Structures are given as structure tokens and as C-alpha cells.
Amino acid sequence: MSQLHLHLLSDSTGETLEVVAKACLAQFDGVDVLRHFWPMVRSEGHLDRVLDDIERRPGLVLYTLVNSNIRRELERKCRRRGIHAVSALDPVVDALSAVLGQQAKARPGRQHALDAAYFARVDAIQFSIAHDDGVGAENWEEADILLAGVSRTSKTPTSIYLANRGYKVANLPLVPESPPPPSLFALQHPLVVGLTTGTDRLIQIRRNRLLSLNQTAETDYVDLDAVNAELAFARRIFADNGWPVIDVTRRSIEETAFAIVKLCEQREYSEV
Image (cartoon, rainbow, N blue to C red; front, side):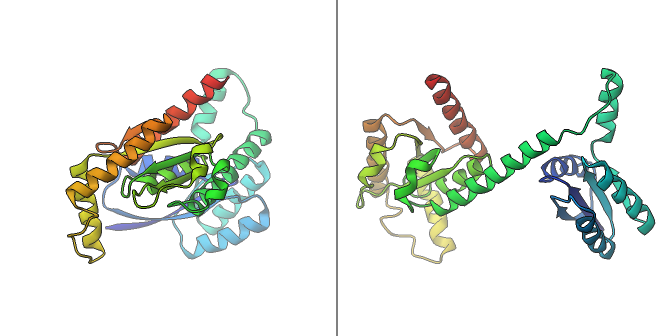
């Protein structure tokens, strides 16, 4: 198996490069790809530090750079060091320029907007991690979404996936022996969504979880009657408060998150 050091260099977050690289690499078999991310490269000094590291681990440099001076410096210094560098977007931009009859322009304003979106996602991820598993109830009103459900209904991974989309998400486990705080039922800003699942599927997931922790598999946590009682407790709370409910039994994390985003969009539309 051949090995490739792939350096993704950008003056922004590098998300475009990651998508392009993934799509292109899917066309090749038997390649061990080591990805190196170099985001926010916006000065010659930063570029030189990056190139020093790239020279120690030579491979292919894939880049997106708006600043023409930094771009020229990258190309010049890569040639001088014998490093192969390719602009990921040039062929598309050139084709658009020819078809539209316009000269392509760098748009710093749009670049700044992308940066703002990036930092908003970082903020959302930090919020979601800090408000996992019922923590930080005093800040729930700041959330965009609050996910509620019994244990092992994919609340945490769904929260993190949504956070990567820029949503601040809190999540809360519903436990019959420990009712949720009254503040949950007074929330105004967050969209509260109930997550549920089938009994058999939930018991299977919980048994696997116990096995992975080397714990006994015969507890109320996986008892059929106890699990049914938990799910019924959660469903009553959802129904009593009129919260939308998503059954995650046959859904991937991505599918669940997409359904929640649609609920958010419908809510925003109804409020306009």
C-alpha cells in the first residue's frame, strides 16, 4: 500500500478542501492517506512555517487562497522546494469566468462571513458539550434545541452533529426516579424535541453498552418491564407538553438531525 501526505492549506476553515479531497480520493484504492490541515494561513510568515513542516513530510499540497500575494508566494516557494501544489477551485472558477464572461473576483466580505460562521459553530460545539446529559440547566434558555429522551436514544451524538451545523444544543435524560427540573417546562427559546425508540432495540443497545463496560447484563436498565415503563414515562411528558417526537429506531444520526433541522425551519417559518 502506497502512502501519501496530503496537505490541505487554506486561508479559511479548509472545509471545501476536505470535501474535494474526499471525493477525489474515493477514486483510488490501496492508498494510505495522511491528511494535514493548515487553516487560516493569511500571512507570509505563517505560510513559511507551514511550508517548513510540509517539506519535512512531502506530498501533495491542495489549496484554496483568496489573497493573491499569499497565493503567489505559495506557488513560488513550492516550486523552489520541489513540492507539488494544486489549486482546488481554479478549473471551476476559470470555466465560470469563460461562460459568464466575467473576471473572477476575490470577495473578502464573503470570506469574513465564512469565518463568522466557523466561530459560531465552534461556540455551538462548546455549548453542546458543556450542556450534555442534563448539565447546565440554568443556561438551557440560551439553547436553540433541547433534546429529551431516556438513556441511549442517541441524544449526545445527535447534539454534537447539530452543533457542527451551528445549533446550540442541550440534552436531558428522562428518568422516572428523577423527574426533570421545572425550568424545562418553562423554556421559551429552545425547540424541545423528544427522542424515543423501540423497546427491543433499546434493550439491545443497552446490553451492548453494559458488555462494553464489563458490567452485569441483568439489571433494571435492560429489564423489559422497566424499559417499557421508562419509555411510557417519556412519552407522557412529550404528549403533556406538546413537544414533537422523533423515533430513532431506524434512523441514523444524520437522519435524526435532518428531521430536527426541518422542525426548526418549520418553527421559524411559522413565527414569521
